Amino acid sequence: ALAIDPKLFAVTSVRIGEQGKDMTRIVLDTTNVAEIHYDLDNTEGLLVIDIPKAKWLATASQNLKKSLMVKSFKGMSDESGSHFVIDLNQKAKVVATARLAPSGNSGHRVYIDIAPLR
Image 1: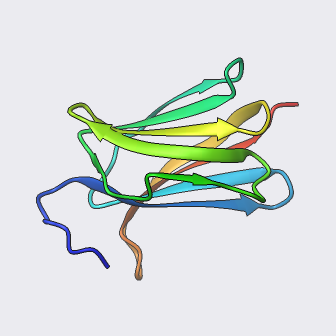
Image 2 (image 1 turned 180 degrees about the vertical axis):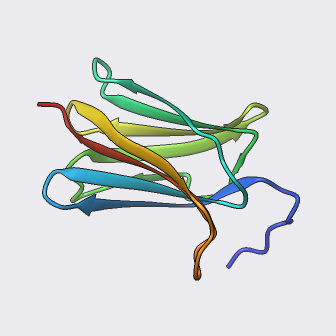
């Protein structure tokens, strides 16, 4: 595990997994309570998640072979915070989003569930 300065607010990992047959969950692990803002653009096929004030320390980019909804993603940070840009396989809708408090071996997390737009 990466040793992270406790004062640094950062996104430390990304997990994308299928939940049932037509929902995809995107989980971001963060070092502290995170606020997220998202913008879904079905014309461009992009979901952009902004995490204000957070540094991006997770995987920078990845192509997903088997995900129903997610083709690829890129993560980056600038002075305003972190930006997580997801290239979608199809038109989507955000079904749910929530913050999870630390429990067990997991720290702070936020998730977004997306599903095909019907």
